[in-house]
Structures are given as C-alpha cells and as structure tokens.
Length: 389
Image (tube, rainbow, N blue to C red; front, side):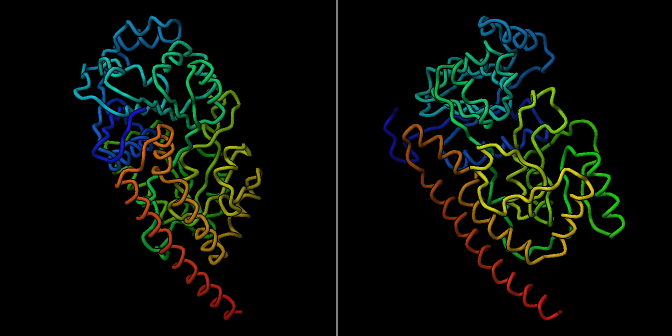
C-alpha cells in the first residue's frame, strides 16, 4: 500500500474497452469509468484492437482457453505503453476476454503500485472455459466481480482476493430533479421479454389506451455515444410509471448454465423513480442489496395474472408515489457508482477525495429533496382520493 492523503497525491489509471465495444450493454460500465474520472486525478486508456476478427486477436483468444503461453501472442491492439507511474490501476472489462488487449499498455504492472480488475459479467462456465486467462488475473491485487456466485471460483484460480461489486448507477443522471415529473409511459419493458407476458401487455394496453413502451429490434443494438445513450435511457425511465425487470440473460440458459443473476436494469429503474415490477432471483446477494419492501413487486408467472397485478398498481398513484419515495432514499445512499468506487478505495486503505465527498453531498441533498416533495404529493393525492368518494 502507499501513503496517499489527498486527491492530488494519488494518480489513477483507468483502462476502458470503449474503443472496441459499442453495444448498449457496455454503456453501463463506461458510465462507471466516467464517474471514476470525475472523482479522481486520472488518465483513461482505451486500447484499440484492429478488430475482434483480426488473426492476432483470434489466435490470442484461442490460446487463452488452452495455455498460459497465450500471453506471448500479441492481441493486435495498437501499442500505447503507460507514460506515467500510477498509484492505482483500474481495468474495467465487461467480460474476461476483454482483458486480452491489455498487452497494448506495455509493462503496466511495474508502473502501478496497486491494481484492480473490475469484471462485470462472469458466468461460472466461462471461468473454467478460459482458465489460463482467468489465472493471469493474479497479476492484480484485487478482483471485483458483479456476479456474487463467481467470486469464490475466481479467487481459487487467481490466488487473489475477490470481492462482490454489484452493479450501480449514476444517481445524479438517473434520479429526477423533482418528484412530480410527468410519467406518461405507463409500462416500460426494456430489452429481452417473456413472449406470453408481452402479448398479454400488448392486448391490455391496446384495449385501455395506455402507453406501453418496448424494444422492437432483433439484433444487438450499438451506441454511437455511450453518454447520450445513458441520458436517453434515464430520461425514458424517469417518465415511466412501471418498469419491468427480469433475471439476467433470460432465455439464454446456454450461457448461464442455469445460474440466476441480475443486471444493472434492477437499479436503473429504481434510480429513475419508476416503480419496479417483474422477476428477481431469491439469492442472498439480491436480497442483501434490495432489502426494503418496495424494492420490487414480484409478478406471478402467469401472464394474465401479472397484467392484472400491474393494472391494480396503476390504479393507485398515491401508492406508487410512496413506493418510489422509499426507493429514492436507498438508491442514493447505497447504489450510486460512488459507493462501488469507495468499496475499492477502502480495500486499498485510500481516503475519500474531495470530489467523492462533494458527490456524496450532492446525492444526499437530491435524495432529501425528493423524499420531502414526494411525501407532500402522497398526502395531496390521498386527500383528493378520499374527497372523491
């Protein structure tokens, strides 16, 4: 460890995959990197591959599943060795194979006092499929993984501490600035859908002239600007009453080996103030992170029964306002990227920077304002409801 006492004393290197991956699913991780940049004296490196199909990268990927000698095979990424010495090196990757382009940074380990690898999506079957690659993560001092069930195996293979680092959100981007924001979208069903539930919702919302928002694309969409995408997503959810969530990779058991996980959507809906409904794992890590009664309203498996439940909720706007008021407090205190970054800096014994304290104060002020405004609004709606009877 190093003795670091102020923001200007420590320097952080952030390694991003934003030059190689532009899928919408990658934007959440890039948002985390942006928040880190705002909190630290940092430089961001984004190694650029010729392409994922270039022969060098394909060969390195082939070898990393079979032998530790894969490290002798260049990835084909444009060489850009670190120019400075860093107190903390933070490599953020969505999937383990993304780490293959790190060779572009030269001898990064010698230029870093401390190093953490932040892994977003690591299914157990991929850990053993890429065992030589996973073992190479032993060069890091710490590994932070979004999937709790993968942490133990990662630690066994790398011999390094592995912590569970759940998904989070930029609360200052997603949370509304006032509680009475208009929410014309009645139900928002983002991403993969349950076909029977979608059909039932289509019929219900068409019959009742409601606004049902859902995706219509079939191939994986890409983002030309990750910040614009996150702004747009936050805007859409902020103007939705109900937000549907489900298990991670729903319908793709070939990738998950029946492991049940949860993704960033489970926090994005809450942060933006849409009342969250749907399906969530009964796992210990989910229940630990979302331990308040209004975090999610679990729907029945039967599609018609699920629609009936959502219809009942939409008919009680005061209850929806009260639910989102409780959720705002938990999201601001527990599920901003600040808390995730602080988990890492605390591990290394690093103090908060002034920017971290400023962000915390801004989130606390916004949360308090929303809680106060929502409380007043619930009273008004409830009074009007009683008067109408």
